[in-house]
Image (cartoon, rainbow, N blue to C red; front, side, top):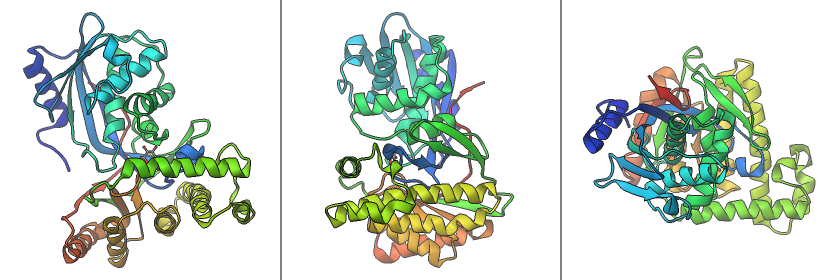
Length: 388
Ligand code: GLA
């Protein structure tokens, strides 16, 4: 999943070729995987993502006026827009929409956004559920904030990047991905309370435990993922209303049975059960990590997958196959990560078992006639930074 040559060099080269100039700086933001806590963020709950060593890099310099020109290594032509397009949500479409969305969100929050020329390169695979869009938003936000000398502390950035995605691009996502790619630290998972955005950096030293996280890109085509995501979110909000709580986060696991008894249908009960039990699994995972009992989180990961498959109904045969094959080959735990309907699976494995487990997943895929999955071994990397 890594590109060649180095992604930062590609961004610089894209800038130099495109604009015949040297960039004023380069800003990088990573992709992420979520260790556990799925579809809990927009329920004001808990998540535990970590940043990947795969990054998106933006090389940029200021340009006069309210004009933004953006080149990407995945596109032949630049995207160019001014204040009128930036101020009309949805007007710039495709990958350029994420850039325009950041300009829109910053302007909406009252910041004087500098005009800029940008060039983008990325090692984060697109459409694999590793938050390539959040990485792009975060790198652009960091570039514009520095170029404009904007007073914008890291804690305030995830909401602005999320607003770009929700309000400009039109995807009703929660706060997890943008928080992960901006606030994560190397060697740590980010324990985030999505209600008040407080964080705790939980040490996650896989090497010391002799373990590895294998990330398997299921390569399943995203089937109606946007509509299904929005409908899960709406179902959770309806259920919270019915239960008379601000969000499903407010249903403690001890009160789950009583809450379920008050809900009108089985589907709603299953959606609520996923969210309430998933929040508890995040808390249990954090407690084990803090106690240095890393290998013991495996069963919680696997339970999370079962809950997404059976209660939240967001998995597809490719991801279920990857999870089953990884577990059968000795993984300590495995689950789909991200919004669902495709994307990636993560498996916690003994370090020496990473390759045999990957091979077992590849052969299970071949048996079922699925496209061969990509794999990478992940470790917790830093969040968005300005490159030297
Ligand atoms: C996507 C969204 C996140 C979160 C996850 C599911 O990644 O962008 O906000 O809801 O799905 O946990």
